[in-house]
Image 1 (cartoon, rainbow, N blue to C red):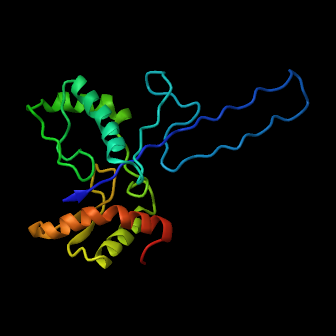
Image 2: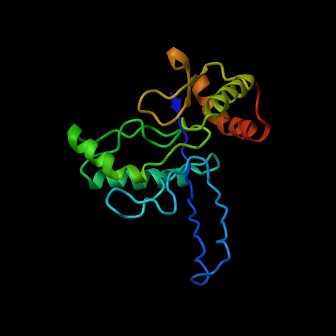
Image 3: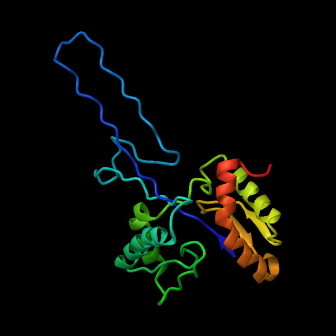
Amino acid sequence: MTLTRRIVVIASLATLPALAACGSSEPAHKVATLRTPGTTATAGARASNGTPAVARPRERLDMTPEESDALWETYNRCLSDHGAGPKAGRAPAGRPAAVPGRPVDSKVQAKAEAACLPMKPLPAWQYDRANPESLDFIHKLVQCLRAKGVRYVEEEPAGPGDDQNSISFGGKNNDPGSISKGLNLTPTCEKEVVVGGGRK
């Protein structure tokens, strides 16, 4: 069983002050801008259709299951509105994967996924493959879980097409004790690793 987390990023746009009077000899003031790790939209960015680009939502480690469900509900509703269904394995962490109710043509599914991409939640920054420290976080998380008695837990680096690194529980025999204990202890270990740096 693979555990994944997602977070929301709230993108903030900075505006530049207008130049004072025409012909003023004073230099324009510079504005400092704070970028949140993993954000993709900028103040002047435009989508291919000319509308302002919007940053994808991002899950956070401190999100409630209800907050995470709401993010994924928006994405899944978009897929449905475009004639496709949620993909198996795209359910929120710790919940059963969605099972499509009917087969969907692969072209329809691909078009729906492309149309809904701006609504697809990005993983928590700690799990995001774009984060150069993500694999270190995953390693420390696995060490913490093992120290707390989770017997079968492994690091799962992102594969081709995946946007996140993750962990898996249960080993080749899907040990129920490791799965249950791992799912219960993951939030505790995530906090310990984020706050204290975790084990090396």
